Length: 272
Image (cartoon, rainbow, N blue to C red; front, side):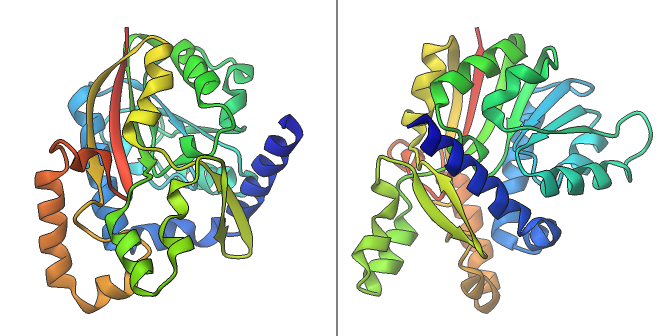
């Protein structure tokens, strides 16, 4: 089992290596991802003071780092992909002296081995925590990386995505429609590689953190009314409709039942 998880983690890192050069551009040019990103960063602003120390887990190419640095945060990034970490380091070099993030190449599940000390907040955007082999253990390492009262702001890839179910059922592809309901790690194609992840409802994500001494601050859906980010054709053909759907998404994302769905979930937790 441990060997399998180690192999899946290595394959995931290689898959992200394969898209590192294009990942930042494809993210910022995707209006659905851009809207999600704004909401996650806004949640960090609501709960974490300026000049705080922020640990970005699964930082990718550092797409969030200029925004976080401009907000006064002192950012440390961690990513398992060497090429992603290299991209993030190069992006950090363009940020003004004194606020340039420091980036480490390390799988999240080995966070403790880095010995980075403690932070005021942990930030994780677009699902890196879906890819760890043992979320309970990682939640414990995150707790040890936070000051008492520190918060976790994470967007997590969800299990129940209504758009995805409807899309693939309309194509008579039931296996793909219900792929996210698999309780084991699932291999998802990414260009020429495979990313291994476990889809999670917000409740499933929150549970191991509660066991490690966190309290829930808030949770909401990202992409429950709006389509998932890979529907770029829809976004290009119907930009005005998409804008309305994104606005509705923001308005209803915290409603009971709906907040357990979505392409992603935005969860804020506080260390007790």
